[in-house]
Length: 633
Ligand SMILES: O=C(O)c1ccc(O)c(O)c1
Ligand SMILES: [Mg+2]
Image (cartoon, protein in one colour):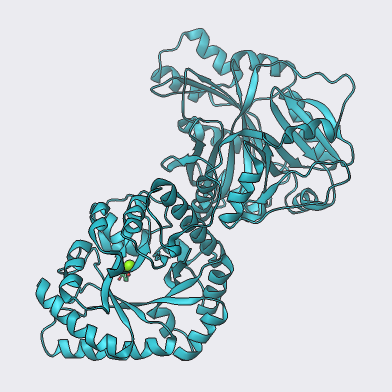
């Protein structure tokens, strides 16, 4: 597969950009003229620098306002083109992008444009370069790839071809199926970008809100399937103008882009099994998206007193310490099918996580059909595997690095990995699991900075068969938190991603001390929350106290039996409802480090997460004041 990315897509100096792009695994770059002009070194040096990184220059761009000009501007435009062709020779690239004119004096006319390009083709051929014509969605006369193609067709010159850009086609609502009738060898280059559906001026939308394929709402896959069907044999290249990416970490953004391209071409290949893809489009062979069967375990790093506090809290939540690891300072706590491991090792990943964060979730185990497939797909998408030394007799559980240094383990059904609990752990004599009706982990809430939300969503949705829901706002008394759900089609695995923009929100404060995306809360599902609340109260569980105003409002909004409302109020149970059913939830207080737990009951198929309650939950948590293990403000 031949992958490429435009230098505008990421932040940094040209040298920083090249390093990040090369490291992420791309084959080439589109060099944006701005990046060249800003660089303090000649074209030969830049060309050498790029090739030294193992990259090729797939495209030089953009050349603006060429076609349909009256004299004297027309001659000037041809002159300008010749100079840039010379520059390209020195850089070492033969392809340039001409975007459709926005010039106020451009006269328009398909034949006038075709004549200009036919004449330019002769010069281009002479100078050994090829010219690709792209319809900008806001071009003065040409703003549709079908018109650009007609111009290229009429120019009828070997050195003049078409450049397609998914944003300009899809952003304008043009049916990408129209691409299938263009001959593949006349498509000189293909640029890909997605974007969130926002109703705004096309130019502004394009220059600030593009994102990686799969991160937005456009039908980039359908666009690419149409391109692939033409026999197009060039690179697939990302051209992403995005304010956030321009200010982000170039390595992360470059890796996200690579992941999105590889996943996209894998999807295209599966969706178009009868199309023979050109070698440049043939994706890295990998297993399909991995079906997940839920959480196998959640592992906390906690030592000393913090470990005792966590153990005590788990006890009040009904968990039993069932087993301890034969060789390491690991305890297995269990409730129903939910497994929580407390890792008090001072060495290794958990030891480091403890030193960096205090009590925190340092590892997540996911149940999958085949762990080998999960690792194969993850690594093809650019993830790194994670390994720690194991003692004789221990089971090697495959793992990858998530984003931000996190670790995800795969517990494969096919590999029988769940025997790890018997093989590596020694049961605690007399320990008996409580029967409290808790069935499983309902969801896990990960807190991150707002800038990281797209990366995490892409991470999950390209690796697993998981979909994202629209992003919603959660109101914290001290700022806004954005929240997005990523869940498996069958609901077996659900995550809520919370993006904090300021440190003053509960999520932001947690983030500031946890140095990156971390699990902030874990929700357990039960069949009867009212019965569970009684059981847990007897075990000493203290629910997060809610304001009486909250219940007065519930009474006004819904028709409750007065006794039910009283029981909810007494147990601090929160309530929500959607068109499918009802939802009950209770929160724990935050423990040292800021992590907390949630207990939920989904009655008759409720699909949400109690979003409307979040502001009141956050306010209640803040009323309790700062907690141990949180940083000074
Ligand atoms: O926003 C622009 O001007 C611009 C320039 C070059 C491109 O390839 C493009 O898609 C947009
Ligand atoms: Mg473009």
